[in-house]
Amino acid sequence: MSQPPARRTVLRGAALAGAAGFGLAACSQGDSGANAPAKPAEPVDLGSAAAVPVGGAKLYREDRLVVSQPAKGTYKCFSAKCTHAGCILAEVEKKEGSCPCHGSRFDVTTGKVIQGPAAEPLPEVPVRAEGGKLIAG
Image 1: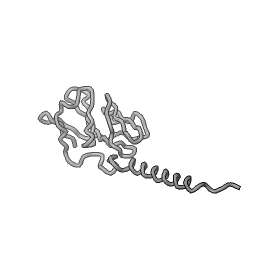
Image 2 (image 1 turned 45 degrees about the vertical axis):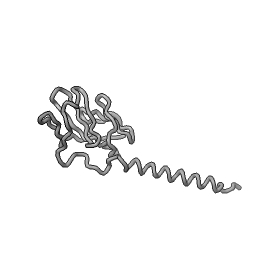
Image 3 (image 1 turned 30 degrees about the vertical axis):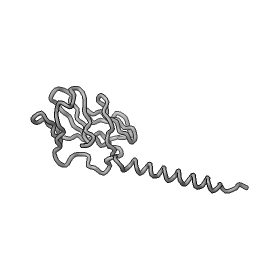
Image 4 (image 1 turned 90 degrees about the vertical axis):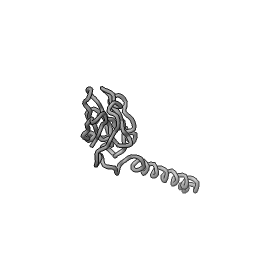
């Protein structure tokens, strides 16, 4: 006949389960941007067009956008909201944007998924250079 678990074991398990639940809630809410729209509702002034390097990209995390400049004077803009769970990309390295929540990676020049779990590409956002500034949306 087996003995019931000690009170300490039961309490420790309950505390760990509670902490795990909190961690999942923090992942799905918090700074993830899951409830924010993927595209801006109004035009967004991103500042100097010169901030986006030719052949590279720049993440505008606060605005939830990523802009690349594949050729001089040609800009492409995408939502920086991961299509898997809605987290905002954390960084752009070369031409890849990475999601901190579950590891999805995107080509920021095309929006295409490089590595899942995301299955859908980043939504494209209209962008234009106007008076030396970038305007998205």
